[in-house]
Amino acid sequence: MGMVANIIKQSLEMTAFCANSYLEDLSDDDLLIRPIEGANHIAWQLGHLITSEHNLINMVCPGSLPALPTGFSECYTRETSELNDGGAFHTKDEYQKVMDEQRTGTLAALDRLSDADFERPAPEQIREYSPTVGATFAMQATHWMMHTGQWVIVRRKLGRKPLF
Image (cartoon, rainbow, N blue to C red; front, top):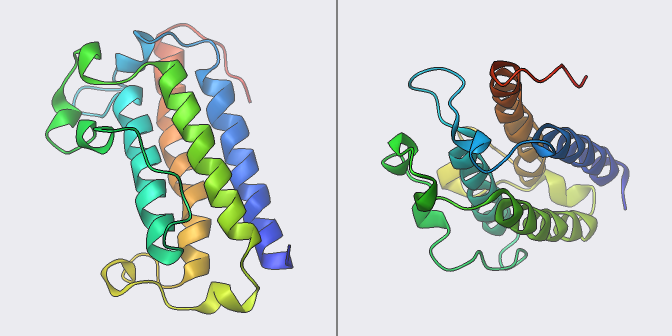
């Protein structure tokens, strides 16, 4: 693994550590609590993050990630973000399973890239926010971390002490 890939891998691993730590003692019902009115609950955010990683990594490295479960992506649209019914979403165990499968695929794709590959342009439709293959991989860590910061608020609402 090249230096660039290794740095991105370390960022992805730290983000996964934080996400899993924040989720560890939350129940399926806890995942439906919104940090504030109008914000997305953790259940929706998890599905959004998993779907986003799946789509973006497959855009820059086609066929690299395993298929998502049937109907998974359809549960995480702008319209579904307003739902509060747990039956419309997945369980924490299901999220963690799919999250691990997708991240394993992301890391395997990352491992196959040379440092030069990271400079290749990303597909046109994502270049505005992710101009290169490297930027697309790196943004997975920042995207996940941005959302996990919102989970801290839910944890505090539930009376949990800070983890970090």
